[in-house]
Length: 608
Image 1: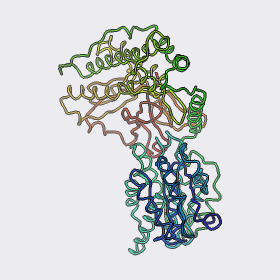
Image 2: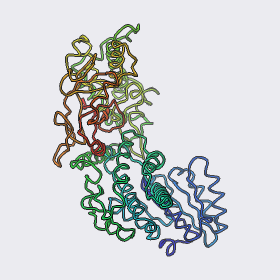
Image 3: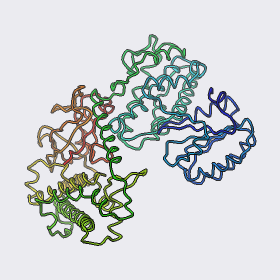
Image 4: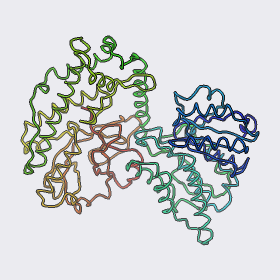
């Protein structure tokens, strides 16, 4: 409001530079309603097909003296030159205001940037600042009318909103990805709680249907942005924790898991709740999110990796791959070629002759899987060798460059925002989806192909007598499905009737197990395992710990449900990036499943 009254004029656009997840739309809409009226404010979310509509509305609003907001200009940078031309010929009404929002983008026009009033809008860092911002938006009039339960529930909403936003600092352990929780979600949540509280007063019983809040928040508002089932479970646990009848309306203010020493005031006063926010520490504790005490180590490790990768990009020669330059190609690609040679010097994978296994439907599924896994692994090694050998010959000058080699080099050296960086070629990823760094990719491929060579020499009966390292497989999820299929065949039941169970004592600990196997190669993050159940991490605990081998088997579902009350279903990811799930394992945890959900406990395959 101060910005509008003191610094803006009709001929100068106001550019709001936003960070991912920050959305000023609701606040801008409220400001427009207060200053010029709701009917004199228009907004367009820019994207495909909105350009003509935007220009028409720009001309109309500038003539009538109303407000216009064009959102997300970073999505239409190629069109912004057209917008500049229109702005140059406008003769706007004195009351006209043009608001623009955009994330930082390298192709944003310099002239438009210079001709605009620029302000930044970011999601405030930390729970305290996040709460204070919410209480700036919620005026005393908005917050204080109604019952004590209503005010307490609104404070719970503000806290919940801060928690889900600030948890994004700990990706991928907090959330698996960045979800754009925004002011629009907070506004929708306010309306829902306000309406429910008003209805409760009219019924004279004061009871709030918190299950209704859970459902709408999970399915339509905050949860509508979440596309990972593990993250959905975390979100649900917060909703259960912060919105239930046991914690609101207490005569003395009940202790509630908002933070150390925080009580809900038995009051509707805006100032009473803002005072709680003012007294909070500026530094967030991991425990406020339910995260482990040692998570800062994981966060620092991830940030360090990102910084190192950025430095590698800056140090790499900016070379035009479209134009072949033998010297520059040699500098960029020789390290990869040398590593490939080293990985294969004690192996016969490149020369091994393999043919696609025949399948008549009578072989045990596990045997068929292992044969196909070995074939695919060796075939991938030989494909990689063929690609890199062709590249090496061109660099050494013993072969002429072809279009195929040129395209392969472009795929290997991918360009982003003016810089080149390594990227695993798509033709490799199509055969096996592995690390995006080609150095890591070829290491992973050779290690797994060698393991498959060793596995192929074992009899199936011998295989089950030893620990099976899932991280040595290209497709561990397919292996588990083959085990399920073979179990169903031997049990004479359908695969849908079986569920996966685990035991850390012995194979005898799994009742009705037809084919129990011992698996290893897993790591645990978010907590530790003492051999019998999950335990919390100490501040000095390693961020990742080895998970002991366990016995698994597919058993009838009615048997698998026995004794699951004190277990939690932990996801098993392909890697620590947590972007793809192999399976889930029920791990003993005690009674408080919510705690282990919120701490980000997960298993993933060990790097080989």
